[in-house]
Image 1: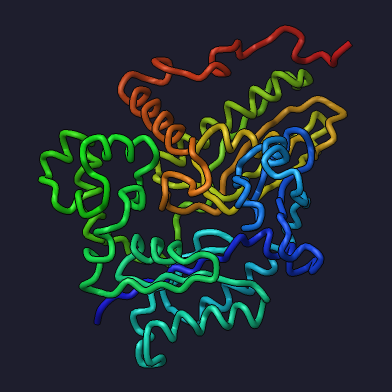
Image 2: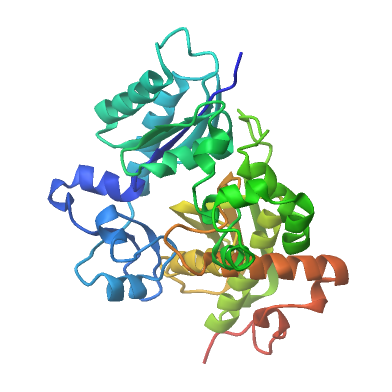
Length: 394
């Protein structure tokens, strides 16, 4: 029996829920995220994306790009409730089901052929059931493996349904630009084009040793992907549910600069651990324990997974703005959850994501070879202990 993988991805999920629950927002550029100066965009409707707005972008920048944008505070209870209904629907279509986030999952539909006349019928059925029960639109990709299924679901967004059949992988991939391969962002795309590789077919035809000379170990991976090869199974359960880091301080923290720096440090550690495990996160949680032992946690979820320190840090700091601080802080923690594989190393809507991913990977490699102290970001170099940390500001 041939293996068939379906990738279901909700279109602009958070923004679509807002437009569903508030009909006056339909057809308008909706931007979901904090409204404060340091807030970040959780997601944006397709109307807003036309202006260049994307997730993880500072709200201030989103306002510059889209002055007509309608900024909405996230309503995570509504998103979670809708997500639960969507995932319940998905469970009807596959025994092996791997949720990636609130709005995305892989399904192994290999055994569904006896219930539906065609693969397209399965895709249309799940799209219709989701629409009927949630009033939301999903895009679906069906293919022999995860890589191709994810690529297929992105091809015709929004409201897409694309099937990549067996035997057609090479043919379908061949004319596509090299940037469509997993792991190829702006920097690698430029290197490939300069070396004469403009479309995926050029990589299919390239000698393996040439790709290795140009790209190192990634050359072999791109060669496999260029033919549509991906052996990863659909994993019904994950051992790692979250990755976090926290510290309890001998002296309570009062200084905003020190608090900010500690959040930056914890965000960096979490980001490094995510990359070590080959994961990205779609939820960030900030934990604050005060001197009175009162503990507050706040979480934010977003559509696009990340393993970058600066993005995790921005989300965590935006959460801090929602926590009134009237006493010293004895514990700070940052946790990443809703984990999934880095199916794309670059956001479709971010020109700088690839550069930042590569810079982070390069720093990881240097620190792995020569130790953490060999190369550190500025906030690591600041003194860990400062005078008067235990005393409230005068």
